[in-house]
Structures are given as structure tokens and as C-alpha cells.
Image (cartoon, rainbow, N blue to C red; front, side, top):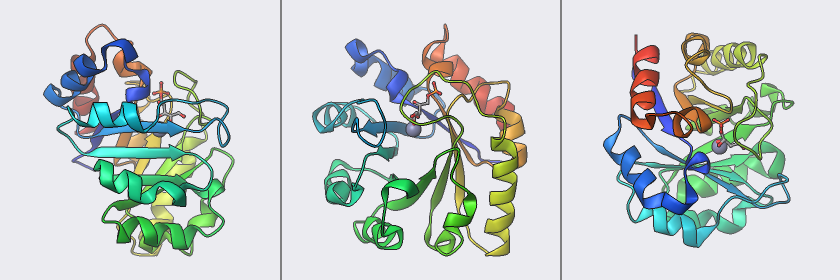
Length: 220
Ligand code: DX5
Ligand code: ZN
């Protein structure tokens, strides 16, 4: 606990005012930019691609936490390294050779993250957990912002923290989907280090105040 990171998801930003929203995050207490990349195959939706990401990155002054919801992510590891990603997260369900993918992300100079869909058991990470910098627990089914938080997440995070401790793995646990001021503290209590928040931040009246509130609630 302590030092909890808040990562606003730019998927919920106003795409007609991206520069304004990137600046808001720069000036806020946010720690990272969470960037959701979708391909319409791994998930049923398409978000934004390289040109839009590149445009945002030109203005972004905080680390980029890139969440790939795409099949065969190995094809784009170098591209995201060149774009300046700090953390690159792939889905376990999208990687046949997850160990190789994780090593390739680290070899490209980024922190390696693995995301798990709500139905995927944490046991799939048992053999690679010590190699990971971040595990993203999806608390909604990936593909869309604004969905309802899945309550089983608390228990899953608790079990994942216990697994990480048992393996002496210094891995950050990130929660993605449906995060609000109602569940933030309990998620941190369960073992989370990074909270992604899209709609809750960008649909609020004062997004930068909402980010500050999430910090206040979680860094107690
Ligand atoms: C969902 C994305 C999330 C999404 C979260 O597929 O990975 O990052 O933007 O949005 P909210 O916070 O609205 O659930
Ligand atoms: Zn995400």
C-alpha cells in the first residue's frame, strides 16, 4: 500500500479535444496515461491506432501504460517501444508463447505487463509471474469503457497478491474496468497498486479533481 498509481484511460477522453484532455492529465495528479489499443478481433471494438496514439504522445508528459487488446501482439512490440511506451501489456489469452512475448517486451526496453480477462484464472501466470512487471486484472470484459465492475475482482486480486508474495515476485497489480471512488479503496486493500479509470474520470464534472480524489481515497 501507499504510492498507489492512478492511470486515466484515454479511451474515455473527448476524441475531438484530445490535446486538451492530454494536457488535463499532464496537469493533474495522475501518474500514467492508460492507452487502450483494440483490433476488432481480440475484442469486438476498435479504439484508436498508431497515428492517434502518436499525436497524443507528442503532448503527454507522463509514462505511457499501453494496454494491447489485439491478437498476436508480438508484431507490434517494437512499434510501441519506438512510440515511447513505458509499460506494454498484452493479454495472456492472445499469446500462444507468453513467456517469449514477455521477454521480447523487456528486450525492447519496456516494462512487461500481462492482462487477464475476468474468466481467466490467475494460475496461468504461475510460471511467469517472476518475469512480470505488471499484471492487469480486467474487472470488466475488455472492449468498452463504462461497464459495470465485476465483484469477483476483489477475491481474484487477493489471491494474486498471495501468489506474488509466495513467489517473491515484485509485480504491480493493476485493475482495469469500472473503477470508481466506491471500489477504489477496497481494491487497494485487496492488493492493487495501479487503478485505471476511464468514464469515472472523464465523465465527471471536474476530471482533474476526480483524479485527485482517487489519490486521496487510495493513499491512506
Ligand atoms: C476496457 C479498457 C479500459 C476502459 C476502462 O476494455 O481496457 O481501460 O477504458 O474504462 P472504464 O473506467 O470506463 O470502465
Ligand atoms: Zn485498458
